[in-house]
Length: 106
Image 1 (cartoon, rainbow, N blue to C red):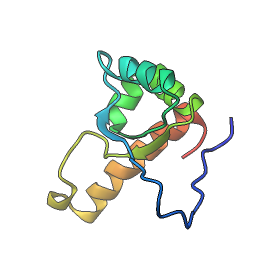
Image 2: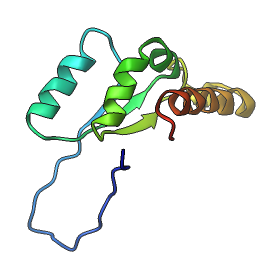
Image 3: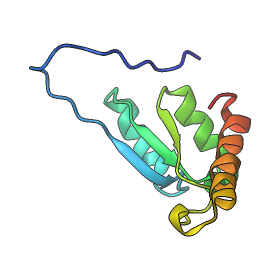
């Protein structure tokens, strides 16, 4: 599937809204949310937790397939400012690796 692209525009008259969702995917709500977005032909950005992505890979695959942006929200929702640089980097790396393993891209 093609990666979504962001196209710069000089159009200052058109209002835009960017939808972002954190801490998923959630087995109870994310698919319902994806259904609603698809019905309305709307794309969003999902900032995923690595442990949740690993637990629900089919939902992550669907997000990717339907053209939503996927971002990294750490592995298990820790406050990165409270971690050593090594541990903070590990949280980000583990999540990136989980997303890549599921979607084939980062």
